[in-house]
Image (cartoon, rainbow, N blue to C red; front, side, top):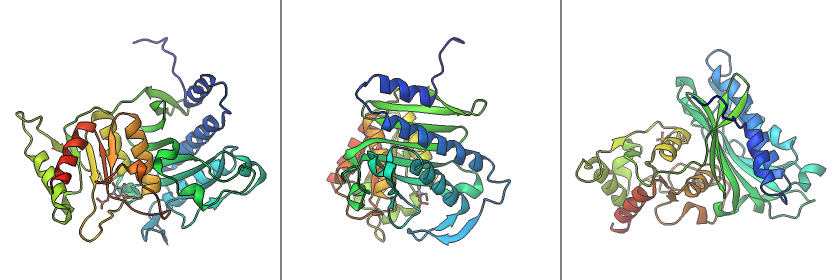
Length: 337
Ligand code: P6P
């Protein structure tokens, strides 16, 4: 084992990246460090969720009409506060909040970025100890610096993201983020309380053997999706298989696995919900940015997720994301039906 290998913390890594771009202001590096701090605070509560009265329903319902777990609220507040008290963010949008939050103070109004996040995705799994996660996307604001940010700052195409990432609170806690320069993963070392670079320059394998979809909806999917799922089931040694089906019901965990090992994750539209369930702004766009930078693809079945023109803050889109070759095969099935 190479004991001399320098372990880069998230802070050291972002500062190193900053040194590579002398003209950079450091605001993005500062924002990413702020998100890492909030993630560490959320991780503490997620890890002891079974021990304190932070489990269970909060009794309220969010804008999605879903029961809000106490950890949802805690996570939302941690990410919102750390960004509000930082120097890089003018405002946020969150899955847990009906409207945007404009920080509207002198320093925040001068900030360059806005952030959209799902503070705790997969929260339905909290009580049964299944991996959950935080997802975020960072945009350069369109509104004039020195003024409060506004709704238009939060209705940008995903292609406009300057950075995107997620935290997966799983067997270990990892923070993965992408800029246009690449995707890097950091694993939390509890002994020092720091995210340490563990997965440098992540590339999504062009093909994998895992397909991830909720089979319970099979007969409500469009024909092309049914055809692709059936093709996955028919894979064997003679045609690039066999494939395995894995579905955790926690998007962060399912997509993270595909990013690292290769594979495809699908949350298609159904006959009763043609736009599916996942939200464009703070679930689909961040992951589409990350996976595309890593060499994969992400579409709604018809166009790149990153090219979709948002119309509302919480709009839902069908989501297909993962290894390039598997996405190409899916596209063939969709076009032919
Ligand atoms: P279903 C979790 O609630 C979530 O938003 C995603 O994390 C996950 O991929 C999806 O919903 C699971 O939805 O309908 O398959 O249970």
